[in-house]
Image 1 (cartoon, one colour):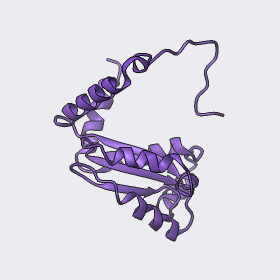
Image 2 (cartoon, rainbow, N blue to C red):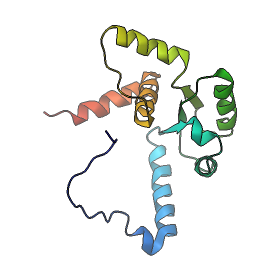
Image 3 (cartoon, rainbow, N blue to C red):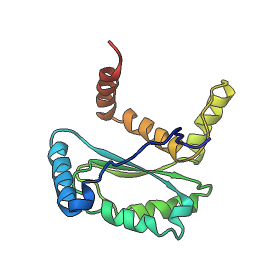
Length: 165
């Protein structure tokens, strides 16, 4: 099953304003994010498959744009499809050029032995871990992020605010 399924015909006109003045819109959005980051810590979770790392054309552009950003407090790269330690090390070196304003840049080895050991334990307890892929990688990275000091507190408050009263 695909990550997203939609039935029926739906007109999608979001971001139409960008076609009118995209540079002004981008500057306004970046300014708002910089202002917001003064009050709230912000993290970026970027799921990457090893195939994108090896010769993909989009990833270098994405990394170049992220490296210009000053409002991120942490960057998490959720790296999937890597089976060998040398490939993981190469990815860590590649993403090492990224810098977060007040925090770390970390590469999470989604298919690494430590995470896979946790998944084996879960399977042994008859717990479903879902199918691997970018969405799965994002959930792993979010779990890692929320387990860190300071981030989990914010996640709990956000989650509580979403619960029905």
